[in-house]
Amino acid sequence: MNPPVAPASAPPATGPLPAPRPASGGTGLIWILLAGAFVMVLNETVMGVALPPVMREFGVAASAGQWLTTIYMLVMAVVIPMSGFLLQKFSPRAIFVTALGLFTLGTAVAAAAPVFGALVAARVLQAGGTAVIMPLLSTMILTRIPEERRGRMMGLIAIVMSVAPALGPTVSGMLITTFGWRSVFIAVLPIALVVLIVGALLIGASEAGRPARFDVLSALLSVLAFGGLVYGLGGIGEAIDGKAAVSPALPLIAGAVGLALFVWRQIALQSRGAAFLDLRPFRVRAFWVGILLLLIAMLSMFGALILLPIYMQNVLGLSPFVTGLVVLPGGLLMGLAAPFVGALFDRVGARPLVIPGVFVVAAALVMLTQLGASSPVWLIVVATIVLDLGLALMMTPLMTASLGSLAPELYSHGSAIFTTVQQLAGAAGTALFVTLMSIGSASAVRSGLSAIDATAQGIHLAFVVAATSSVITILLAFLVPKRRPRKEADAV
View (tube, rainbow, N blue to C red):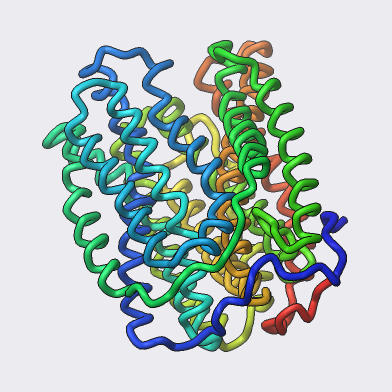
């Protein structure tokens, strides 16, 4: 069922954006934005490896240390839904300078943090900048790159989304082992400064924002909805282990209520052209089908990313560094394949790529169900390569076709919705797979299995459920338009 939306006669939320054009220097600007996004996304994955030495230096327990990742996710979840409004209200140059400025400042504070609280504050600054950069990048591609070349440029975003998380643990592990945890931030700082200066010069100050009113109620409901959902989903694993300070049911219920009220508020604002996050993209079939497919695919990816390290370290006894090396080939292959998939999309459209992609992802999940207490490492390498190849066939076509099917005035809101869904999928995928693993492990322990065998059994259950649910993805893939849809042609 489609989400409720304002009547078709509702006026646009804002004035139209400029028509997509091959602006001079546009490609160079996209490249510098990609460099900034790569560094920012890479930064998201470094704290997992850096957390133990940080805890030792500042003398904090794991319950406090986990806030370095939790606060990052919460800030991202709160700011991303606001990015649709921000991209409409302010000029691209103002958004870029603010985002990179916040990230650079946060990186500098993190590198020199004298106390643990300063490091937490630094992560807040970093997350605030990171949350806006991906929607900005998508919107800039849609408005500055000709339609026939968008697939290739969107493929570069897929590189950022796949290679950066894959490289993060490996690179940070090497830096921390050699120079200590602060070196992770020190190494990033000069890159962030260069990107900030070059990007500010390239983007220019000629493009102005458009009049838009900040709706305080929408902002507060957004914080309640997306912050509550991400916090609640992130706490499910701790609740299962009996370590949660707050029952995840409370923030989940608050988040669900906040989300319902947020949607209601946006529908009311759309009727007078003042939506904080315009929901009209859901009236376009190519968009909502792409959102659902992306959500399920990201659930599988994030679920695998959380379970495979647990399996390799707790069941097979591999070190964290070797664990990072095992999953690295899949991430690199996904990044290398993305530009070629984007070029193919420009020629054949989304459906001929997405349908094979969902079958490849399903095959990878079936392979992962074969993992046991003594499976060979090569099976994990092959399964992750197959999984990432299938995701590569899906992500770029889905992003490009879904966002490209919208009217120009909805580009920024569509980008914000897409990035919000990715964030929620990460939290939901982690919570779902950890919950299934815990249920399976507990059942195995009651049956008399050892801790290692029980963990392997729980992980097996999680991947069986994921492989079974991939049938939904296969069915949805056939709803993807055969060719690139015309603007608003599929509105329902």
